[in-house]
Image (cartoon, rainbow, N blue to C red; front, side):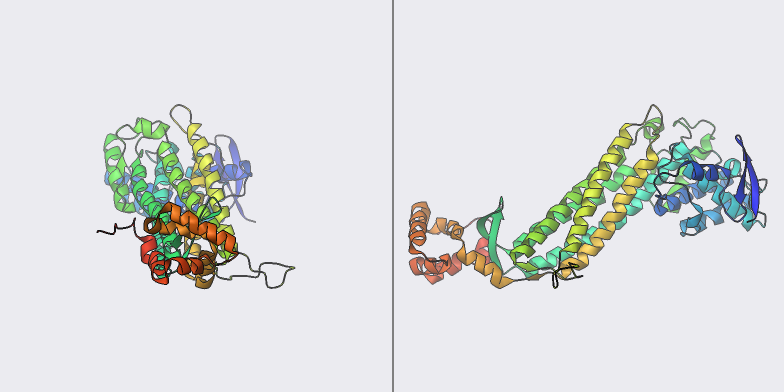
Length: 460
């Protein structure tokens, strides 16, 4: 294998001549062999956007020459387009507050720019990873900024996926609107409802998640780019600091702004905790709804889509595997929220050393939730109601007498229940029709009456 030699303050190192990363990345690759996780591709794209913004600002202000700047920008564009992802081998759980990822990006961009200028990889006299690609920057302002950009893009995709899941539940709400069934509280039968209203509650919970993910984007728009190492902008020209954020807005298409207190934005990463909490809230809804759907399927009131055989030993068994998968994702997202919280809280003074772990956890949660919402949307569309089973539970549940209280009063209801209990009959609806008349029973137990908000007085 052909190799090239690169040098840093620790000495020399051999690298394969065909790779785009350099000595800083190679040391990190060998040091951080711990998790086998790779840096999230969306974060790599966001880092490239940040680097391009910095390059454009430095070129416009005369700190970089045109030829070099154009090559750097072209290399950035390739990363933004998702190319060269295999050139980012560093473990996601790296020490150094993201420096290894920052250097990996710097080196890949530099070596690709060198190629564009017809040079050989590693000839940093043409384009230098630090002096050119990282000019007027620090890991401590570029890396947190890139995480926020990546999160915003992910949030937008998640918001769209949640909206589609909400729509799937709303369609089922309408489809099941006329199916009367028994409600349940504390795993016991409760007053009658409709299957449509039960699904409307699912849709409403998901709609809140949709609104939360839409609104929380604004928590991430304040960035610390230009603050360099600790937020004071040390070693960066003032004109660059003001221009670079404008370049970043143009490149990303996002409404980003530099923080009023850049030191505060550099030292504290609490906005990620807030956003992660919203992911956790969505995860809790997914778990709850998925478990309810499993239970409704168990009761026979709905029929879930059959997507695969459920047992290696029991022929014909079909399990609610998609819902179980969704619940496991929800549990993982909740665990990641704890990771984000812990990582954010353990920053010290003017930096957060644990941003790589935080970035991996929050972006992983977003990726999983996007895919889970997409999967659940198709799954929910295939759910079928079993009206006869719903009716069977209603007709046999003495609790439906509760619905008649405005018509007959509590004492009369107790009297009827006592008679029904001693009669040995099983169908309470038929018994009520005998006692109160079929017309009244049908009116009281109609889908409209059961789902109306309260009841109208007789004189209204």
